[in-house]
Amino acid sequence: MRLGIEAGKDTLDVAVREGIRGVPIFADEIDSKGVKATLSPIRDRGLKVCQIGAFGFNPLSTDLDRQVAQRSLVEKVIPLAVEEIGCPYVVICGGNYHPSGFLHGDSRNFSDEALDVFASELAPMVKLAEKYGAKLCIEPYIKTAICTPERFIALHKKIGSDALRINIDVTSFYGYWEMWDSAQLVHRVCTSLKDHYGLGHIKDICLAEGFHIQIGLAPLGSSSTDWSQVLRLMDPHIPNDAWVILEHVSDAKEAAASLQFLRKAASEAGITLE
Image 1 (tube, rainbow, N blue to C red):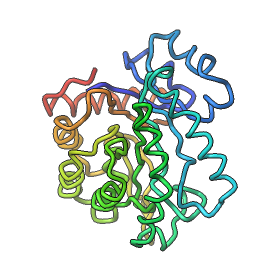
Image 2: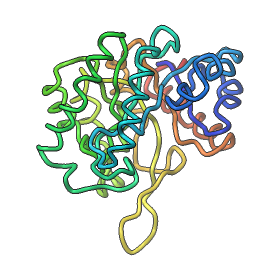
Image 3: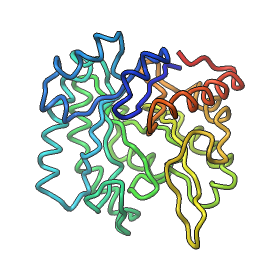
Image 4: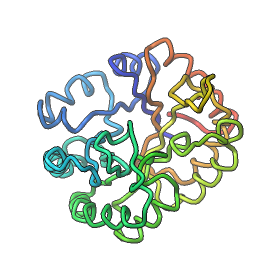
C-alpha cells in the first residue's frame, strides 16, 4: 500500500521526516495559486499528490450560490488531475442538505429522494471525470446521504460509472455501538465496497465521557478498531493508483506516535506500507 499523510501545517515536514511519499492538496489552492505554485513545494521535497480535496462540493447543499462556485472549481480541477497534478482522485462531500457539509446534518439526507437528486446533480461531473481519466471520490460520513455502503452502491447504480468511487474510511460509518465493538461493521464496509474503492482513509475517533453521546477525532488507537483487520481487508481491493492516507493528525508529535501504531498494525497484517 502506498502511504500518504495529512498533518495540517506540518504535513510536508512530517512526510519527509517519516519517509512518506504522498500528501494531499485542495482544489481551491489550485484555483487561487495555479498548479505550478501549489505543487512546487511538494515536488521540491520529492513528494507526490495523493488526494485533491474538493470537500466543499456538496450537490445537495441548500446554499446554491456557493455550490455554483464549488461546481465551477471542480470542473476546473478535473481536467488537470491526471496530466498536470498526477493524482486522479478528486474527493467531494457525501451529500448534505445542510450547507455545512460535514458539521451538521439534515433528516432529508437519508431519504430515497436524496439519492435521486444527488445522482442527477453528480452525473455530469462523473462524465467529465471519465473524459479526463479522473475519479470523483465520495467521502462518506454518518451525517451525509452516503452514510452506509449500501447507500453508495445504490447511488453508483443510478450513475453507472466506475469513475465514481468511495473512500474507505471505516470510522466515518461508526455509531455508538461501534465504539465498543467495530469488527462486524469494519468487515461489512471493507468487503461490500470491494468493487468501488477509491482512497483509503485512516483516522480514529473517541467516545468522550458525558451524559449523552459525544464522539470526536482522536489519536490513532483510541477506539476499539483493529487496524490490522482494516488493512488486511482493504489490501486486496485498493487500486494500484490509490493511496492509504493517515489524516486529521494534529501535529508532528502525534504523527510520529500514530505512524508507529499504524506500521505495527500493518506488520501484524502482513502488509507493507510504502
